[in-house]
Length: 73
Image (cartoon, rainbow, N blue to C red; front, side, top):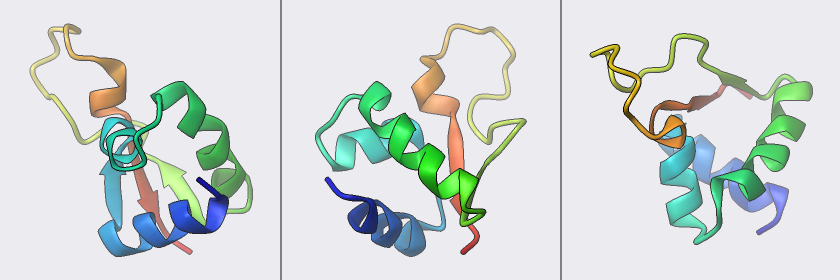
């Protein structure tokens, strides 16, 4: 996967979890994070601090399932 493919995916979805992105590109979340970081540094995407995922507060969810990114480009 290259950065432009990630950009197109986020632009189309607007908001996506790390797990959704990893699943879409058939890659591990740890492989996707550095690529997302490039867009975060450029100010084109942002990581939601409160995450939009699970609101139960039990801390049993996979972190990649609730780590949420938004395209703001």
